[in-house]
Length: 143
Image (cartoon, rainbow, N blue to C red; front, side, top):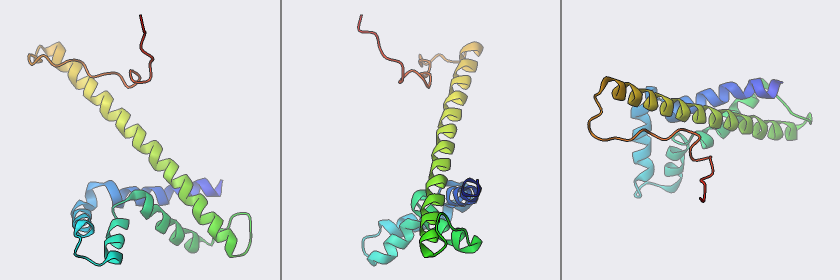
């Protein structure tokens, strides 16, 4: 149970730094530094670390496990190593689920907007209804 609770702040912090609008200017500057091929290799990798939520979650997991003293399965340094990768793995799973939910919510919002336009008679451009989220999962009939 502790593992799943410890992964929540790791996922939230990683996602906020790497994806949210709060730090967009800093993230864009770091992305430009990363893409600049004239910079030193370690500097480019350091800049990339802050723009990738999966990479960042590893470093936040290292700090979080050290800060909390959480060990998993073993009571020596190996317990910290195992705990770090376990916390990061669960945090990545949380971020993946959150990303899927955001995509599904955005798609449903677009479908609702499209239906509103059709009902109000404002869709004169001939746009078709966006596909349902399950349409790509449903097999097509051969007949």
